[in-house]
Image 1: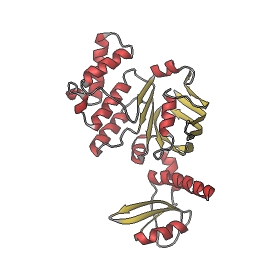
Image 2 (image 1 turned 30 degrees about the vertical axis):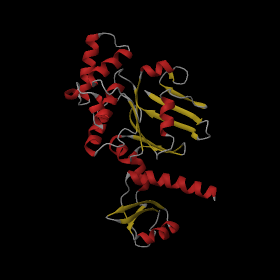
Image 3 (image 1 turned 90 degrees about the vertical axis):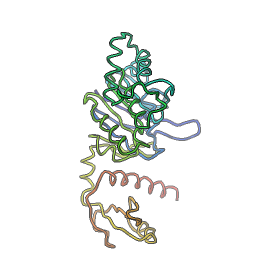
Length: 298
């Protein structure tokens, strides 16, 4: 199974150009879509999920033309949006059963077996009688995956699934995603680099509605090998270094700024070469886009 997105563009009525000629080919397995808030990730996910029309372009899932065969796509789609509503006064078991009926699973024995299986798979079986209003954020996300799996989908979209989860719930949720079939396309849309690092064998970085890169995370790391330099500095020095060097990230470590610099050669100033991680890959592309925009507007 393959998802092919070609020249996809979308401009909203308020003038925001959310998608600018997006081209992506996504194969079975876990695919990470990385980008900051407002990059166009949710716009792309909503378009693939047939919740909005693009201005131009095409989307093909196997033999299905997503833009003209919406019902066919929806039958094979599992979708967990960034925010989804649940009936607070109903139990997880009852709501899953109700949603299964809406999905066309009319045989009561088959439906009960499926609901029970999904509750076990998402580790919610012991809480199946509890009202959803009493679920934690992580439990609600796991319920969201359970409802997304009701129709045995070949395409699953999860949009910012770990935002707001505590570390334990985040790990539990990511482990659940990692257990999904290798025959399924799972698109994990997130701004959290660690989510992609731990799960995905293919990824893309998107910003300002454009795809900046696509490739295997390990290959992307290899491209940066020997080019990342680090130094802890005083706060008053950060502006000077930023004006002279290609600083791709600046984060506080024990209260002091730590700068990461992208450079083919030793940038001097006492910076030490370090092994790149996926966060460096992400920031190298995002910072490049920000600098290009700054130059264009100056």
